[in-house]
Image (cartoon, rainbow, N blue to C red; front, side, top):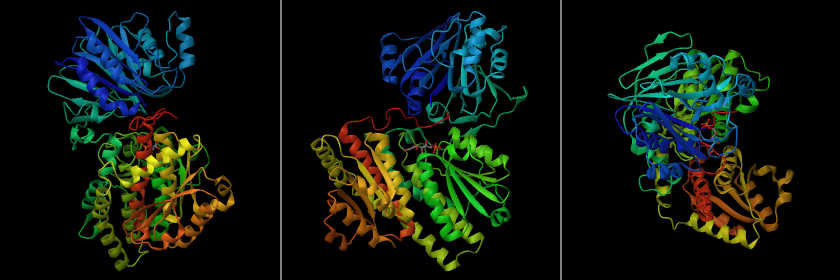
Length: 619
Ligand code: F6R
């Protein structure tokens, strides 16, 4: 939700800021702007629309200067237009501020500032910050930012510059991410690592309530108590090429195709001499042996990974487990306490609802574990323990490789807990580990079948578009799965609706007769997950019921399944044979590809779907 950057050094700030913003566009893309300080004057340019609109404007009318701040927006307060775009200036135009987050008490602050004579021009909450800094400025920008943030309620990562403080950028954070990049004779500020990786790999992850003051030659950080702290500088291990498309048409497609490698990496890192190892876990084995229940809490795709995790954990580690969406968990009165392990799953590690759920669980004395992808993210730092998924940067808004990485971690965690609690025989565990190790190459072979754009699933997507128009846009998708693949039905539907804007629902197939079957006529396309499983025959009955009512069926089946041929399904996708327990990792691939190719057929913006942003740092 919004990306911010700041640069101070010798380079042309405009270039650095635009490049940084292009790497953060996944966070929001409805408007963008920069403010650059040159010869004691701030020049700000902001434009509604994608970053390319701003870039075109700046190409025709470049701004010179070697320090500045920039922003790419996902609108919360005020429609996307030039005025509401950041940076926001104070009354005098001497102060510029970019902000990611939501200021909850902005109306009250705005009233107070208006009474004092401040003139507002936008509908944003952010503009209150620039006027407050103006109000608090007595010749020291850092002090003014400190006084300002002390009265802000809500979440923020901000960067501010002042014409009279021409050698400094001041940043601050509370519940929205902000990192500092350390260069030689230059320094950077950003919402996320990819924005600065072209220039440096040395990063400081700021803590909540930290205030940073950056000059060309140094960085000073003071904590919430106002004490100067010695920051921990971390070295980013991955390369900027991982945040580039590398020849793929979209990040989403690239990330789908990376999944076999991601899985292999996770297995290489976590399985040593047949044993599962979580170096960074930090939770004591004795504690994990004693937990009586597990609550898995997450949003969106991560929630679906959590739902699959419940099936795994209950089957093998035999610990009662429930799954909540973070936004529900945080506002009810969940039954968690010292004997509960609360697992928060989050790719970004910054999702506001998941972070709040984590804090609620800690308040109730539960043991907490984050399963996160982004290193140094808030959830990873605040949970008692963390397991990183190490999927590399996920840029496409629709999550794919982070999902499979989360599933992989749940498999490993399940086996780890099962071994710790002796709930499964050693021989069975060894067999699970050895089957798991075969998954990356099976996934690789499966993906290889879809390397060309002229593949079977792309053809089905084309066929769907034709049918959709023939049916006067009344067609839509249903996804049916059972048991451990039921969450995949939800995930398949979510992927499709978020990038193709076509209605899609996921159901446990056994629920059809309790209502959804009323939907079936010739309009819906029903994706049935019918790979070999203990409920295979039941799924065949569901397929019959759908066909009998005129529905169009795409069946995902196990290679060599001849029985399915008697059921006159419309479209078939064959998948490699794996034990049902591991099948979610294979089944999800065609679901992701189907969503991708349908969106491609309809010509939508796949990596940046409307109304969405990658990292949901607001409620
Ligand atoms: C869907 C998607 C979202 C995220 C959700 C949680 O493709 O990406 O549903 O899964 O917003 O995000 P994280 O995992 O960052 O907490």
